[in-house]
Image (cartoon, rainbow, N blue to C red; front, side, top):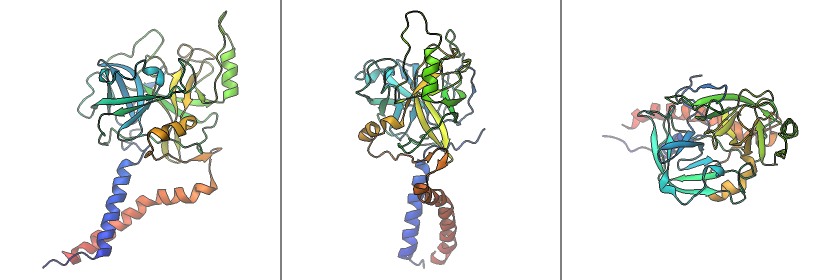
Length: 324
């Protein structure tokens, strides 16, 4: 005759189930470990938050999955946010032509553009896309971490930008249109403003890098995001998690000298994002490339949870036979 499980063991198994569900929802951790202009082909499952936003079946912008039902992208990708029937989002794809059985198409319920956005190359070029229904996370569909304002992305920090955009100002990414990845260093705002003040065309008013903008790339050009990459993510590795530093916004041409890519700082719009997605868990991080002491213990507890869970699972399975 089977003995009933003791309440303590039942609570333990319930807790383990909760921890397992949290692990499945963990952001910024690709399960696949295969490790633009001047970019290179991404590996399968390497950037599982990357999405293709499509209009009438054609890719026009990138984006990043941040929860089961929300995608972060650029406001300039949407001239009319009410025509949601025109749009769909492709998730879990490495290539756009024949994405394969791992990819999923999702319909769009609504688009929320930042109300402060005032046109191309302006501040607040961010938008949130709500999917019609939550997507199931897989090895190829996972969210990126969204930073809170405590995360500081310093100059020269090496980050990655991804997308299906054009390989040059004149060309289109050739079929089968494989996702491209490019490592780019962050450029501090004073230097970026200096670069954009150089070689200005006659009669052209130099653009100013605003407070909510972030530059990344190379002064010499040659490597950059380009047309079709807009709205995609600039991600950096922070405390062993991939965190989205920026949203691809604008640039003068593609990969031109003294014209690095300009991104919208995700941390600058923390309150706006939180207001629309109150359930979103933001990632705290480091300052000056070091952990903040005030948060070190909290992160240690978070990082040790998988090890503790593994030990508890082993203990639970060792105890189960006595009650069966």
